[in-house]
Length: 259
Image (cartoon, rainbow, N blue to C red; front, side, top):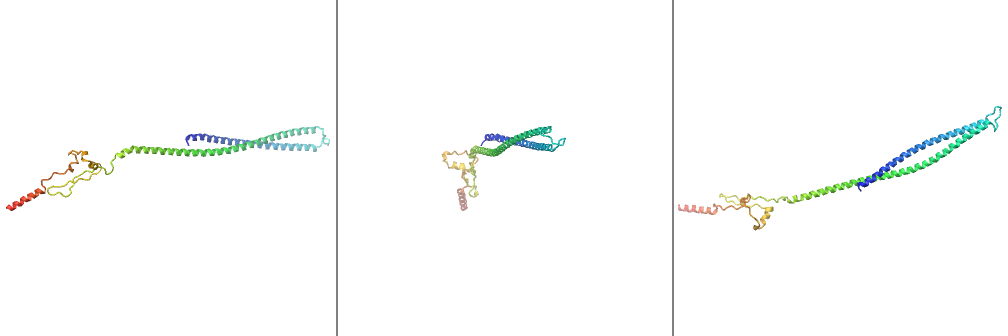
């Protein structure tokens, strides 16, 4: 998943939210209009009932009302004509109101069907909005995972480069214990009174040991002035060795016998 897909999905979710809000607003307004029309119809019905009752009352009064000479008016009298005119007017008013009421009922039925259809669309829009939110959440999670993987790969590449850069230095450093040990003259036993002592060679390790194992032709001895070469050479024979002592003892013995 990439960020482009996320950007492609986000406007769709925004549009669905806007459509849902618009549908809700439209439903609220239509419900309000329907309530107002219902109230108007109720008032008109009440007025029709009132007018009908008044017409019936007037007609009943005219039938029961006696004339000036104590007789009821005839059918061809003016009062009867006036009553008929009033009845016709009232009848027209009633018919007009009935027609308006039927039209209002038809419009109300159509609006109810339209509201039902809008409610279905609203339910579908809510489901789509929920799906888009879930998809956006999954896209964000995939983007975070991709970013983490990219960061890990970058770190691994940096670590590998660091190891490659440090490899020559690691191989060039001498190992522990490979440094050459200096050789010092060590007496194998205490020197005698005449200073005759022995010089021991210290064990050699590392590169000096390898050089020591090579043939003598391949090695070039260092000059005598080398700081660590002089102590390792064998000392010159002493004039005060055991033979000189024996000679001296022999001379002393001969002198004693001569005396």
